[in-house]
Each structure stands twice: as structure tokens, then as C-alpha cells.
Length: 393
Image (cartoon, rainbow, N blue to C red; front, side, top):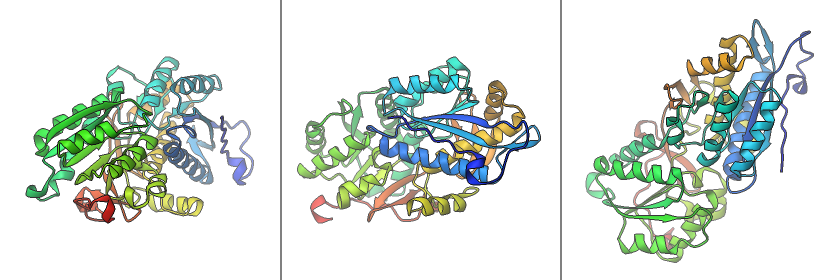
């Protein structure tokens, strides 16, 4: 499946462009189908709303005049091979920058293409830190990384009274680079988190039976489970945890619970799940109200957690193009690297390796809603802990 989305100034009735004006051509590759489709839909929504807002205000200032953003968005079907080919197609179309999709494996494939083509690349829903250690100059991610999530896990546990905190943890480790990286981060976080990793069991993405992992965690009396499954894998894990009568006090899944499909498919069984989306629509940032209003109008709810970071990517890129003053990829790349601005996700800067210095947040599904539970001072609800048995929900 291939989806093209063109958002141009003329389409929203702002009149003809000045003679000789150009569009700021931006290319995005996002998984709208396949295992990451639910997350990719949030990324797409953030990009589209941001472009609509910028174009409604006249576009992006380039060399003294405003021109529209023209976004071409392609579906890679959650397939890294197609991610690469789609980005090569966009490069040939003369885009000034790339926007990424959802899922660290897809971003890792895309980053190499961006580097080869010398096209600045912005990506969120992307916690893999390893790819940032490869010397890529065109890769930027205003999103937290595995070590950040490890530290945040310690922060989350610190708001639980010491005597009640999880003492034993099971890590369900996906057999991927990110799975190994995050398992290492959680193991290192144990030193300051006051827990012991009693199970670290691997599984292949797309597996249908996770009962062995669940029984190992149950047999070890693990108080908590940490994992980063895809949405289909995560929902299957929860269903099998219920079937096997295993309810840890705390469960933290990265990625799988980000989208509303989590609660729609699991109902009350999906409650109490902590997720590491990194942003919540109640957090403070420039333009959050406008984003939430637009998302509410379009989808009937405030912005989903990955929508905000995706929106911020477009904000960052637009500001960089304005500072560069020309539609030159290298100059835009340098301007992105120098970013220091307030966005819908709050202040954003980039380290030399392209990782973002951004605000952090952990959410939890409570009564069918995603609530902000950490940091405690900005929380919309207290952490629901310990989780009751599935049969009593």
C-alpha cells in the first residue's frame, strides 16, 4: 500500500503563491499498515496537523517570503526494506528533509539512507540509542533514548513507598538490537531502582506463544515485567498473562500500549499498564492547546502521545529552514543541529550525536485513559499500584 499526502497552501484556500515561489518539499515514510500501523497513524497525524497549522499561517519563511510546506508521505508497511526504497524515491523527488516513522528498526534502516543521500532526518517513536553512535551527521531525534528510559524507570519506582516497590523484575527481551539495548538499560537501572532482574528471557518478534516467558516470570515471583513488544505482541502477552493467572504488581511495556487500539482491544485487561511514550497532551509546551483542539476536532480526543513529538519534528524543521534561509540540505542540516526552541513537547536541543534533550514522561492506562503518572509534579493521576488480579478488574 502506498499513501501520498500532499498538504499545500492552495488546498486550504489561502490564495495563489507569489510569482516564482517554491514549496518546502518534505518527505516522510511512515508505517500505516503492518505491525506498527497503529503507532504510525499517530506519527502521521502529528505531521499532518503541524503542516496544516504552518500552511494556514502562510507557510515557512524562506529568504524573506513565506512558502508552503509540501509533504509527501509514503507507507512502508512496517517493512524496513520498503522503508529504504521509499526514502530513495523521496530523495529523487528533491525533498529538503526526511521525516521518519514508528519503530526503532525502521528508523535504523532509514538513518543510513539519510546519511548516504545527505538529507537531514528527523524521527520520533525511536528509542534505539545505538544508531546514534555510528557517526551519522544527518540524523536527529527529539525523543528520549534507551538510557533515558532506564533512568525514568528508576524515577517511577521512587514514587512508590520503599517497602512496597517491586523487588524482582522479569525482562521479556525482544531479539532485536533495541531489545538487547533496553534490557541492558533496565539491568543497569536495577542498581538505583532497588530491584533484582530474576528473569531475562528472549523471544522473536511476531511470536504467537509467550507462555514460556510468562511462566518463567510467574515461577520466579517477579513483582514487575519490563518489555518493548510491538502492539500485536504486547496484546498477546497480556492475554496470555491473564490466561496463566499471572499479574505482576507493575508492568511497563514500551511501544505496544501507545495507541488507543490497546484499550479498545483489551478493555479492562489493558489497564494498569505503564507506557514510555515520552509525552502526554497535558504537558506544558508552546501550542499544546492548539494541537489538542485540532486533534479533538479531527479524531474526537486530545492528541495521542506520539502525535506531540511528531508535530514537534515539523516545528523544528520549519524553524531550521527559516534560519538556513535557503532550501539547501546541508544548510538546513546545520540549522537543525543548532536547534534551541520551545515546541509542543517543550524545550528541545540536540546533542552532537543527534539525540534530543527533551522533557520525559511515563504514562499509565487507568480506566481506559492514558494518564500522566511520572514525573509526579506534572502528573494527571497518581500511579495505580499495585495492579489487581485480572479477575478482579
